Image (tube, rainbow, N blue to C red):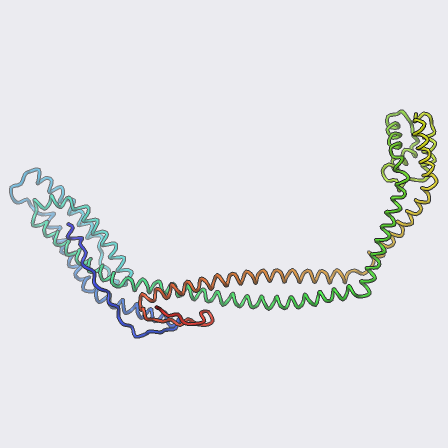
Length: 435
């Protein structure tokens, strides 16, 4: 059955000379439609006769298949050969019947429809031949004439399909190129529109960022002018005075602490003795002792004379050298603590007054100017990031546009190698010509 599958030799594909050699991009759709229509007309003309032949071949195949199915055994054959032939005849006729049922001649002459019809039908024919080939060898021996008719009908059908396939092959390259070109054109148009929109957005963002920069410059200048003005200078002076007062408080506090810190070890020991019940302190004295350990600046000066009495008490059981040293330290505290406490309180009072004065000052203008400058700078940074993103997006879109243009030109060259396309400005900025 190989002779049925054998393809006809390929015909040379002669391209028609098209008069149009240069075309604007926007005119491509109508040009492609015209080319497509011309090819379709040519295909329809070539196919119309083949369709009639196909119908005749199918009818002949059905009739010859029926004759094979109904054929009687004529001649003297081995009973086993007859039995085998009949069994295989059933398979042959079944395969042929399946084939003729699957092949439905279409009224549509659309190229894609014809291509699909040819592909499906040719596959069905090949399947039929593959499934019946072995059986046909046995059938042919007992039913030679009927088998020959089926073979000839299949050969005739195969010839029609070969010719139909040749028509499709000859025109397929151009039809596929037309379809691909339409797709490329849509992508080029979409990319061009996206580029235009992105360019407009980029231009808008650049205008906004320039306006914001000008506004930021004014806000920064207003802030600078405010800082050089009398209100800010006054606030700065007041802040410096507050810092000086804070330092004065720190020094006074250090002076007070220096009188108490040497006694901290003795005070901790006395506290432990009291808490263990081995030494008893008056409630007020115990309270002042705790204050002295935790926050010396808040202790009452009257505590130190009480502390001296405690150190002099033999019940405390202190070694003489330590007691004498502690009594000297207490004496220093009794002499100096009141004055240093007074200095501390005066410094603290001055600090609180300066702090209140600064907090009561009108700093709203300064805060407002700083907030405005900060907000504007933030908006500028955000817009500059958007501009950077737009520029990257535009670069990507332009690269893709050029890629799609090349694909379009490549597909158009398959239709007419001498065609030149003028792409619109500013997207292209020039012409593209096929080589």
